[in-house]
Image (cartoon, rainbow, N blue to C red; front, side, top):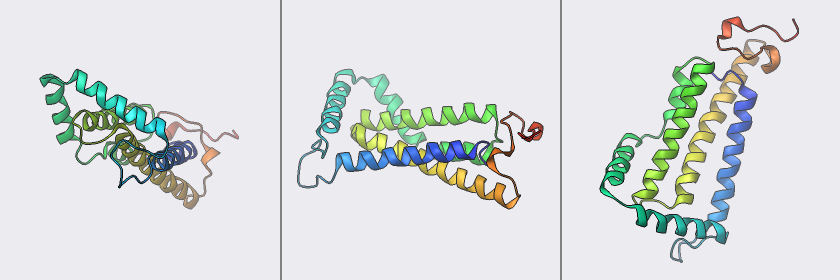
Length: 167
């Protein structure tokens, strides 16, 4: 459960909104050769990234990208952190680490020429957005069932130490 569900909901919805912008920015280009996009700057960034990756390709980076590709097959790190770690500072650190891992995983897919940068970014935004939004909705529903409002507690590392804001 999220400690600050309204913030989590806002962040999740922002990521899902960014996902939609990228989806519409890329558009449907089945009859054209990639990276032709509905919003040309996205296609230019995809091509520039592809060209840069070709310049830095080497055996060490290739090995690292393949390892990330195998490790990140399920791409569910953020969801696991939210589900299994209690709310607080320690979980926030792990959430950021999981988000960083998802980002590196996306970059490894770009490096391996499996996806364009816009595809990988969209996937990371979609996964993180869904994880945060679902966790926030569950947390809000849980608090509503328990008769609390999201503003009832001050954020603390230990939820047992939380004090009502009206006190």
